[in-house]
Every structure is written in structure tokens, then in C-alpha cells.
Length: 396
Ligand SMILES: [Zn+2]
Image 1 (cartoon, helix red, strand yellow):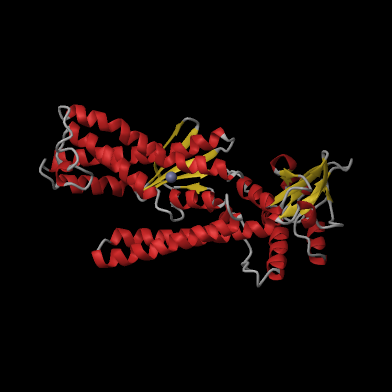
Image 2: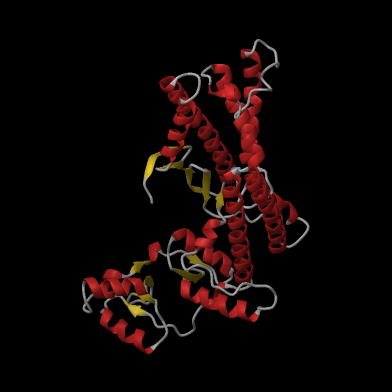
């Protein structure tokens, strides 16, 4: 479901509002419309309140995204869902101190908004704090339209947003903060495992409390936290395995290259005779000009037949990410996920040594994690499109 209610660009980052966000506005209209202000004024006020709430969520995401930008990490998009926002970062910063700053910036924005609203609320209330403290986002009089009520609503929801996001449970910011702090005193994988265990414990407590108090929302959050923790742990473990190997290791020695003018019928023959599925393409002077991938081949056979020339259907070199032989496979895998390319060219001083495919990495991964079995490594290969790496780049 990739239908968006709205899409806009702010500070160079695309913000996408998921269609299901309509439900949030409808919920606000319904909740406030049944309040003391009457259905028309009430429901309009309810919509306004929801927009302000999600405006705060969006600013929270910008806190992550703009801090990431300071460290040279771009943000592909910010997605707004009824359960909150997601900033989809291009990569994970390597230094724990950078991740710490990126994570903390989100809740910090909510704290700043709350602090800015406090004096406004005081001023509107005639300088007296009396009465303000008893008003909050869940209080009944929040449904009464009014500037003071609105300011108190923004203030208290931002306090709640900061507190909720700081719960030490993946994929919430608090879980990432805990992991980043633990990573100062223990290896990254162990820090992740510890943070995930803390999060799961919290999820179980939330679920129990949710069942006994009848708060169904808590059950949903508990589930979200439990699943989020597992995904993070798996992704970090996978990366730890891949990080131990250099790109040079995944290169197939003696891989067959094609020439641009060759027909794909020859490639079909090659495919039958060997295990190679993706072929580097060179021009007559031996220069690397692209890769004929298996999907390219299959599409060409179907669409234009065996007479098709390689050069007409290959993935051109300009669209293929490159790495050095010294790059570790975790980084290579991440580059594949980011670029959406299933091949990467390994170059040394401008010369292409060969290509690595998603299959090559899966193979190294399967062999190595089998060899490490017993040391608590996972045995399933990373997802074919690097989607697990994408999961860990999402900041809520
Ligand atoms: Zn956040």
C-alpha cells in the first residue's frame, strides 16, 4: 500500500503521509465532536489537535534527520503513520557518539517544544500555574476549544512523546540510546542483545499491565517492541558475521566476462554450464562497461528473444555501486540495499577486478554462519534485498 495522503518536501527531505492517516483525523473529529463544543466546532477542533500532535511527531523526526545530516548521513524520507513517524536514514552512523546524538535529538525536540509552550500557557492563564497542571492531553476539558487548552494540549503531548520514545525498548529511541551507551563498555552485538532483552522484559510487563487494565493500545505497543527488538538483533548479528570478511573474499576467481556485442543466446549456454548467474560486460578494449544480471537476461529472453545484444539489456556501469577489495562485506551489503542494485563492482585504482552479487554474499554468509554455529550465530541468510539493513536505518 504505497498510496500517500500528502507528500511534501521540507529542508530537502521528502515527507510522506500514509493514507491511513485519514483514520487519525477521523478519530480526532469523532472524539472531539462528541465533546461539549458540539459536533461541528468540536470535530474541526479535533482535526486541528491531531494535526498539531503529528506536527510535533514530524518535528521529532526532523530532529533525527537534521542531526544525521550534520554527520553526513542523508535521509531518504520521513513517513508519517497513525502509530507515529519513521525517519528512513541512508545508513547507520559508525561511531556510537554519532548515533547517540542522532537518537537523542528526536525526544530533545519534544522537550524543547514543551519548554517553549510552558511560558505561553502561563501567560494565557494570567501568570498563574494554578489549574494548568490539572489539564493535560487525556483530561476532559482538553476537548473545549480554546487557545489555552490548545497550548496545554501541545505541551502535554510533547512531554508524553518524549517520555514514550525514551522507553528503553527497540525500536523506540530509548532502546537505541541504551544500546549506544552499552556499546561504550561492551561489544556492539552484546550491547544490542542486552538492550533487546531489556526491551522484551518491558514489553512483557506492558502486555501484562495492558491485559489487566484493559488498555489494548499497550498490547499493541508491546507486540511492536517485541518484534522490533528481534529484527534489530538479527540484523546486528548478520552484520557482525559479514563484517569479518573483505570484498576480495567474495570475488569469484576466473569469472566469465561478456563482450558488448555478444547475443544473449550465448549467455544462456554459459548459464547452463556454470554456476555463474551475473556477468561483467567489457567492450573490445577490455574496459568494464556494465553487468548482465540474471533478471536482465530473463527479461530480455521474454521480451526480445535470444538474438538480443548484451549491450542493449545490461545494467550500465554508471548504475553499479563500487567498493574496494578492502571493504568489508557488511558495508557491501548495505551499499546494495541502499542502491537497490543486486551487483557491486570491486575496483582497485580505477581497475575493475570483478563483481559481487547478492547471491555471493548469501553464500559467504551461509558458509560462515554454519562454521560459527554454536557461537550463537543465526543460520538464515540476510534477506535478498538487504531489507534487514533497511529496518535498522529507520528511526521512530
Ligand atoms: Zn525518535
